[in-house]
Image 1: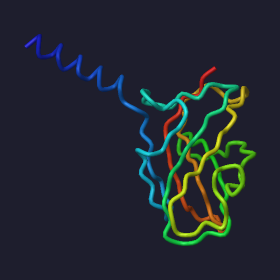
Image 2: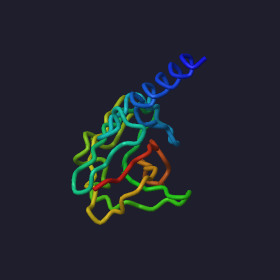
Image 3: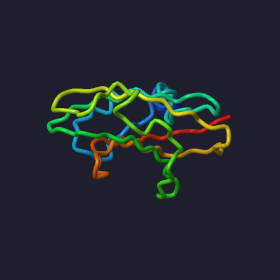
Image 4: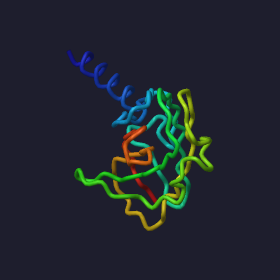
Length: 150
């Protein structure tokens, strides 16, 4: 019995150590496979580790079935269910992100980075990264857990 308990505890520890942060789709009309999304500091952690005064990067592949003339990126921290906008200077997703607008039906890969400001508090937060159209409707939305650290 004791051996069985130790084996289960060891297995649970190994699973939690090797788990990657859960990246989930939170809306939008695009087809997104969360397993294909690459975000700084997520590999091997249950929360993505974002170190202050460094850049967090994202590579977000998606597929569209319709055209979008304009795309804007928005990033939020979600704390106790409240969405708080992150300061994000690269909001034009059609520039410096691997996208060229208008987006027509097909496959794309959005890439960007966000400076983790030294003034950000050290805390655990969920991050929502949105790509929205000209009417502020979600094209893509992903959500993932982050630990902001010094």
